[in-house]
Image (cartoon, rainbow, N blue to C red; front, side, top):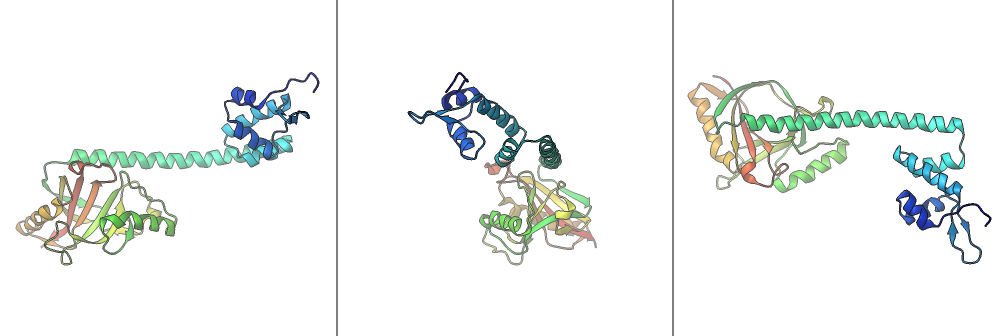
Length: 274
């Protein structure tokens, strides 16, 4: 074996802080080429393998795939290196843009939760003049609570459109005539998601601009059925005509907390002057 310095697999593993299985894999795909002791068939890695493993670690850190690394190491030229680095820079730019979008989305979600927490004023009725709001309708019919996530995933798979849930408001148009009077909950007519962070191109449903009566409450969703009549009473006393079904906006619910006492729900009733 001459005087060239060689390394056992365990020595390489300790030097580069990688598992022996990974080293064996790099050998299997042709990136490393250890020599074998003819007497016991033990692997010994040369300085060339050591240099290659150092390069592998660096390229992995830059985001290159194992196949890209194998191609570069086994047929390395300046032109190929330039092409691969240029390609990786383009991929990094795409990832930066994606992360910027994700960051903006997360900031918007956090802002929504913070703003709604600040808006809470002991279930006081408010009159809100609201602009048109773009939403994502995932199901245009009644759904039980336990089926919402199923249809959300089904929608994302069908339309290749990711919809986050934490900090995004899940909303329900309430079906009062179709509801069971003995139930603690109203039946719903549809399920959609709303957030200022939603991309308009992703949206398939719009809440019309107009005047809405609003009540924001904290606590379990059963309070919707107790509080909604007060919005109808307010509309009648103040000369408003109800134009459409009420909507339940779940700003903070099971997606953000497991404590129902922390839920923050808004009921909006579309109205116009009589």
